[in-house]
Image (tube, rainbow, N blue to C red; front, side, top):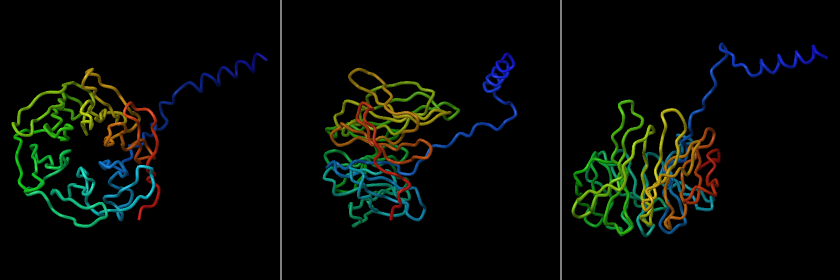
Length: 292
């Protein structure tokens, strides 16, 4: 009996020990397969970039119920934004801005300058803000461009189209973390005001103002760990984590009640939807599903 007890204790001790000569634990990378989702203003459709198969990569649409996945434009296409009437999708292709109809017709180049990325259509439909080292604004009616004379990233708009919300980042020399500022640039006067400033050991990106103008959603990428989605509540000056364990590219529904994002957890990479408070997470797309 005593020998049996001693043997059991030895097994317990050995089970709790870590081998110093065994293989290192495998850390799976994050999955980015259905990315950069953008919700149509009519609330019916979500545009996204499919990266599952090189032969079928491009701009796709999916109904908000998760069915009817269909291609719009195959090839280079990234950074989607919808016109307020949901009749056009603007995006960056090979350094220029284009627009296309949701049925794939009428692909049209709309930018005058090269190296133009991250377009954001204003709620009034008059302008598209984008990044070309500085923040620039395209007049949709005339095609002319104005330089806002400010270096920043990830433009989005306040609900009244008066200001462009941007991220100004001063990153640490390591490339991760730093000091981050949510700024607002007035569309007409170019006046700049600070909404919030904070420091983080993680890298901040994909900043988007809510359609209500009361919250800003963004992603944080730690140096070691999976990407997270956070939001900043302007009235209370609170930063709240909405999703961790691999979550990126947040985008608001037109009523500001829901957020669509890429679930970047290993072996996922599809689109998910959650409520604005981070609850009710549900899958929208399955990357293993064959896309034609």
